[in-house]
Length: 449
Image (cartoon, rainbow, N blue to C red; front, side, top):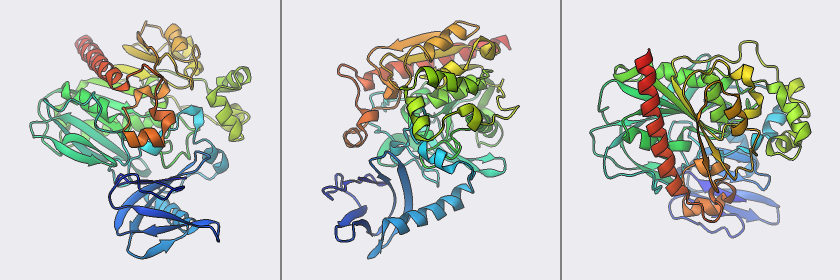
């Protein structure tokens, strides 16, 4: 078992050694009682216990001197906190939802969660080569976005600014930004970002910074129900596009600098489940009933093994898709989808309404979403040829920012790439290509409207 503290501390339960200095919550073990005891030092920490089963349980607790509690009491307290912050979650099939933390092989939240208060915790290292801090300062703020009758969505916004940036804690790491700096520029294009399954708005922070340096306003949302700390609605993927549209609503109407956004130049970038999300926003209509025959033919694929382990033997019988589930957002004029999930659920008919520029990016060594069921399938089914990139040696998680040394040790399945693959160099190319694609596509789309 590994203990993560939101201030950057990582501990090994086996050795009880602190792998990184700073105030943290200690994990000790009492063999006579065969249970762990949490001994809390004075600090306010967000920690995660990662069990061998890969289930993540996240805690946010006030640490006080001399205070002790068992994991059972600790978890009970966190559940009460989660209910207070996020509101009630749906009760049906809770066991299924709990078992789907690796749904579609895309769970990435252990290292890029967003705290309930809106501050990203455990985001990837800001040492990424993709984040050039020498010029074009970037402002940043965390916001809450109205979400109908549910608790507000948590989001982050990056944008050009004239204020000198500084190193600002981003959970366990730092980003070089100017917190709440004034927006520099007028009539700027907007890019919204949709993270992968079990992630958070911080999941593509290096891409957000790169786009902001290129003159874009960038907003990313944590998709409630499919985040690091709440996957209770992972089998309701239609919620994601609606949440992304609410983010656009907020940016155009309620954000403090909304008047400086060009509403005719809005693009969307999504990774994995986020790639699926932006395809729907562009007009795609998936058929989730295709998952059952897909898994019958490919029972060893990650999506199918995750469903089987969760006890979902038929998605068609489990998921009741609302008749109005798939609604496009025509304000979006171009999309980029990296390793989009559920690609095989879209056919030519379902993609016929996608008439805006599309950039598809495939990782050549993606073992979570094997070729040719995903990007290649979408490429051939789209009504207009997309811009298409295939990155040699890249795995599924290559689209996430480079990891720190600590995270490579703690989450090798996410952080360690194939020999010969340089993730930092790839992100320089990826971010430059995204900036170029959106600049050209949104300019042409704006002119045509």
